[in-house]
Length: 574
Image (cartoon, rainbow, N blue to C red; front, side):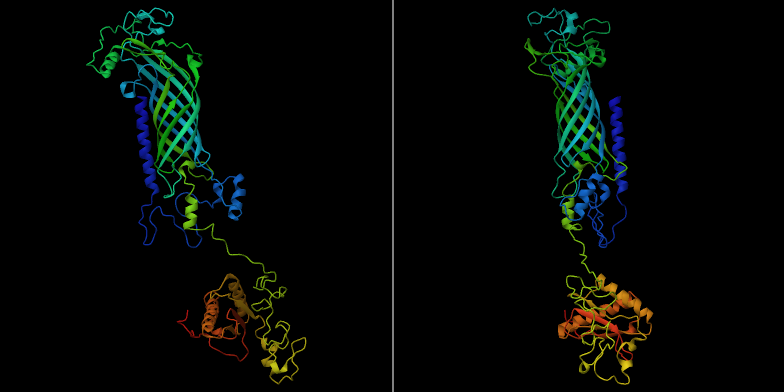
């Protein structure tokens, strides 16, 4: 009845686990262009891993001791990520439990032995794990040929004591029948051989072998007497060559009861609890596991235990052949072939499946196909004076805050008189009036409208707008630094609501003209689309000067006009 209950429980658990697995699978149909189910998916915005398995770049999978290695890995100071926290496996199972000894073993379907087990297993790496397993087993053995050897429980059949190691002839035939009950505790070192895969992310089967050390406590009983405590009379059972061993076995089982009332002979006995003999029991074994889902799996394995005792089946004498007594040539062994249902325990902290289910190449292959960690972040270059030109290329590293600079990081000098604009009291000094004094004022006499066309007074309505420049460095798109500069300009234009701004792109020849136009257009479109400044407030100029990588901006003169929309000069030029 116990075996039937275990079988029923296993079937119910398998059905339940399959149901859980089915619920985990989305029922919705993927939209057009969606990768097939099971294919790793990545968001183009944040590059978050959305495939199977676990995200190596998620720090919550690692213990406090591993955070140092994780930080080094994320900072590209360490090539290998730390080992993730993984789950324990617990399992229950049952199977065939048999003694391989001097008397033939009875299998389960021959009314023979059976066993049950429970275990807990922990992975220490992708290959090795340890397991603590307890097995309770009952093994039964039955002769199919009469024996003439002496065994203590059969003295009522007419045996006389051993004399010089030679057993006497029994009065009656003896068919030895024994029952061995045992408790076995094993600590196994398991090596896994199938989780490392070069062609798929996960395996659904896991093959493993193991070596175990443990202790065995067993007690063997003999069915030598009937219900009246009289010796069985097997004389009526005559060996017949035409009869199979199966027929003889059935005849013997029909004649015997199930009492196993007598203690077996064991000269090595050193009994403990319930008069059990204690023995050291190394073992070897192999098995295979079949994954149902991330939490459940089924295992099939075979363990062979090798105690140092020859009395597990209650005797050291083998089955006679042609009337000759056969003495055992080796120690008895125990074979346990089992089927188990196993569960991976989820803890409160984030963890992955046991590592013997994980493919250690999974992260490496995904990183090659969908790089995240290998993609270095954009470098943050030092810019001590925050003028938008990095210190490495800044020829004027101590520019005061808020001063517009050119592509070399030096303050703008619009009229080229050698006095930067922020110090120049005559912003546009004619060439013929140069050289100028320390304030940037030329030696020519200022005309009547000078203060309207030149100098700081022309900025009375545009006092907040500061001239500046953008360095595109070979590209025609805005980077974060340039967007920040334009955002500052937008704030200044909101303060000077009546002022226009001239956007000027460098580049004189045919190819440079087109690039110059693209860069000026990118600046104006950003200001209108992202900052909400009316396009009419800009004057579009391009192809001015030789430096195609520089776009400058300044406030417009009081009477200065120009188009805000200009057609590209060479639209087909790439």
